[in-house]
Image (cartoon, rainbow, N blue to C red; front, top):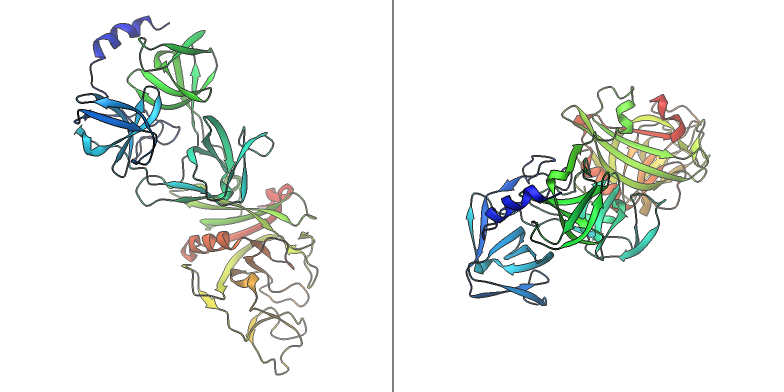
Length: 448
């Protein structure tokens, strides 16, 4: 099936290589070109008489081989003063001090780190908890992320493909490279009845296996007429002449079908499987250039008795509905939110006395007869949070002090999640984008 490639490759197998920017679906080049295999015309030649190839970016890593003066390298990216290269079908690193780069571009800097935040995080065979666990990673471990699918990261795990929940992975990076990997939106399908997988980008390389018609491939990058793929946990190459690349539409977001958002450009969606569960899923969405984008997914909790059919004071249930967002607050300095921010003092309380004219308002002690009961605000749950503008008419007995705050067990009627996520959401919220929060069982989302 590869006969017509042979002549091309025999002519072009000079010691010149081109950097191929990864075509992990959606990445494109650092500046865009989403879904394209973009080859940059840069050559990387060894200048030292002999240069060690190491297993990592530093002299503390083991030597896995060497390259010689004048040899052209297949460079994938740059990390500090080290080039990450393809070396005999595996990944290696060489010092950039002994490599001459010539051309019009440089490889992207590896500056985004993905770190596990959970004590133990399952690695699954697919993007969902219904898939089997194939192993685990631990807190502080750095992950090799390939792409993102919904709320799951696709990773390289001990030489094979795995998936971890993005809720328990911290992303850090400072360059123009994406801080989160893009959604997988390109499919690569084999069109030949049988297609050899080779150890290098050419028919002169040994066949290490084969794929069959209709099989989907995990493509890493493109080099000339060859796709570099993940093949049974190792690197392989297949002729691009017998692979069909097709873009698929991004999955429709739940907010795309909402009809009641008005001019809101930011939405916090809090959902539960039913009215009686205290466990919730928290998602945030933002409208960018007229299209909704998902920003965050996190686990959260509701009132001890779940959602309320009809909220009442003291029922330990969280109200359903769509609400605007009020003042942000906390026991510490403003963490960086654009919302109006109020630092809690020792005298701050929220009045929950239905008979008081100050019912469902933020006040300061002493009461001096103005109320008979009020909630103390100086508590760890209120380290950070914001007011959900529920019962703004202050109807007696309908419920008070409904907040979004810190918590991981259950609440008395608020919505809560981890402190890290609360701060993240506070920093993201922008009053100029008219944010709203929607709270609902999944079965009733069609109301919105």
